[in-house]
Structure formats: structure tokens, C-alpha cells
Image (tube, rainbow, N blue to C red):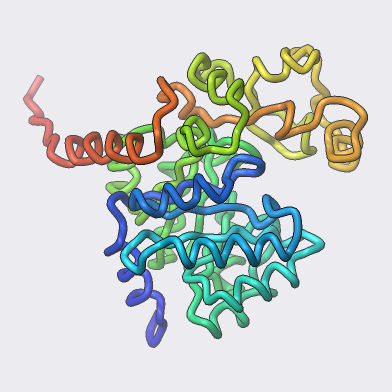
Length: 322
């Protein structure tokens, strides 16, 4: 990274955080209120640009976040979906607002690297394999979000311990661990493992500022890890879904299609589908749902995780001979 802006820029971002956390970008969940609350609480507030109904609304969101957040607040972070039909228009708005960092997903980040780098924006690419990690680095990504087994929504398959160490063997830039981080102890573990930040999604769905339906939030409180199923039925790709939400939608979770084509899954459960809609009626959660016990405000959740993180950092177990 010789001559790169990454170390200095990333260090500046870290210095403004109360916790090394990105509140993950979640469809239909990460609204303006949640992003703002996260940034003010000291964690990076991410959101899919797809949550905005138009490029004009995205422009409005970015402007409001700029005006409402102080320079000392944690940064907000748009998530650009590389296969989105509005990618170019969304990218233009992100560039115009001089956003500090962006997460790319579902495809190579290469098409957006040059324009974002030109305005000093750091690009983090989410990846689910070592091969994808190498390709993202070759494309010019500044950092990587490692999707591991147990992450909510469309997820990865790799064991986080093996994945992080495999990538750290050839990449010295910023790493973010996504999957299974439910509290400060798990967050501390991700740092020991070699990551700079943890990705936390499920816990932030169950906050008062989240745009999720109240029944969704309560279902997270009432559910545990055994209530999460991994299925391609709703998206065509392996996706972590709440079993109770499948039942509530009138579908038998034990009779889901095991290998649907993505176009078939979209036809059944996408925006044009005639039945229950994924994300709206069929809800996702990660394995960290076992750590969701209430529906606090974002500041309360972050304060709780801060205490757990600090306690975990001071725990130095003494080993004794057996």
C-alpha cells in the first residue's frame, strides 16, 4: 500500500469510532433514522442505496446525513449493489457528496474504483471466498468485508477463523468480519483474529430506530440460532432466513425448493411475485440472533456492546497445568 491514502484515511475513520463496528447495510431495514443514530453513537452506519426509491431520494438522504452529522461523528457508508440498474446514477450522487467510504456487493468493484478514489473515498468490497478476495484486491478495493457462515441475508459458507487467516496471509489492508457477531466479546475476538472492524446486522434490526416492522423485531427477540435456516429458495443463493417468518407467510419451511434457479426464486418471491415477498414478508437473520434479547435504542445497544468489548479486552485467562 505504498503511497496509498488508505492507512491515513482509515486511521482517521477509526479515530472517530466508539466501537470498531459497521452497522451492516440491510434492505428495508437501514433507513435514514437508523443510519443517523448509528453514526451519532459512534459506529459506521451503512445502508443499501436500493433503500432509496429514486436517485433523487438518495441525493436527499446524503444531503441530510451531511447536514445532521458533525465532523466528529462516525461516517455513513452507502452500499452500492454492482448489478443494480441504477448503479451509475447512484455512483454519481455518492461522488458528488464526497462520501468517505462505500461498500460494494454482488460483483466486482472495478467499475466504481476510479471515480470513488478520485474523491478520496475508500472502497470496501464484500467477498465470500478467497478467490473473490483476490479478485477484489486486483480490481483495486481498499478493504474487504468477509462474508462468513452465519451472516444474515445472502451469506457466505466459510469458517470465519480459516477465512480471516487465509486472507490475512496475503492482504494487509482493512478487513471486516461479517457473520455471527452478537456482542462485545465476539467483536473483541474478531479483532484478535486479525480484523479491523466487525459487521453487525441482526442486532441493529431489533432497535427502535430500525425501519423493520415491529413484528419482525419481536420475532428476533423470540428466536434463537436454531430458528435460522440456510436456503436458496427465496433468492436463488444461500440465504439465512428466519424459520418462523416462513411459517407465518404460509409456507412449510421443510418443503422449500433445494436448488431453485435465481430467476425462478425472483419470479416467486421477488417484487413482481404473486406470493409472499422476500425481505418484506420473509425475514432474514444471522446466527447472532441468539444474542438479541430486547429492542433498545441504538445508543443503548452501542453502550452495552462497548461495556462487553472493554470487559473482553481485560479478560486474560490463566492457564494451569492439568
